[in-house]
Image (cartoon, rainbow, N blue to C red; front, side, top):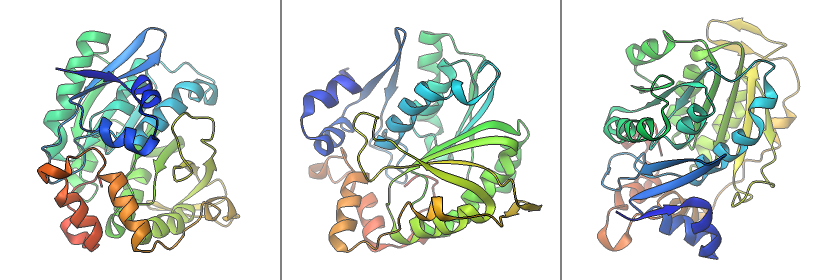
Length: 305
């Protein structure tokens, strides 16, 4: 079974977009974290009804950012710090944090669990992180699943990548983040504009419930201008009302992220990027492309685009 290393493969690819497209065709991707530590993640393009079967570029981007900066954001050691990942997919981001000695819960919809648990098991044996990482099913609209994940919270850190793709799921996502958060939780979300409506709604609502700012990713290799990385914390000026926080402070930082209106060419480009690496000749990615192209959100029942 062929294994490729992310950084080496992308540097050799020449064209960034084509590199990501081809990488998603690979069965196994290795991600070198540093200090002679690496992960090996299996991908499964046969997962037709959700997009958790391959690793998206925003996962690589946020993992790289947190390897560099996570420890500097906390005064206490990372060991046993509680982390939850939403929409974990293949598990690259959460497993990276587990290798940094965080205690991590990786979540995704039920269809992704066999792949996710398989990657956890494979990397537990290699990296001996058996006590620091677990997987749990979580559909953001399923209160029983959310309560189960909340039982281990509140979490010190919440991470998620490419989780803004259907407008009807924006509020359930934000409510899940609020339910899993404590007063000092830091949330990092890395996204690209997959659906203009969902993207705008997310940016409109996130600063109503939280305080958020955009983080520059220009120093992260292979991250392009379409990547949006947000750091989100509980509102310091708001008043908690159940799960919601009403903020009375400035909102310009999040609004500055931009909410461009995509034309059909922009949307097709986003669809291609979101479906990159799923072999067009086999038709494996048609369901993903058609869902995005038609804009029929009701057909998207998973928590990954």
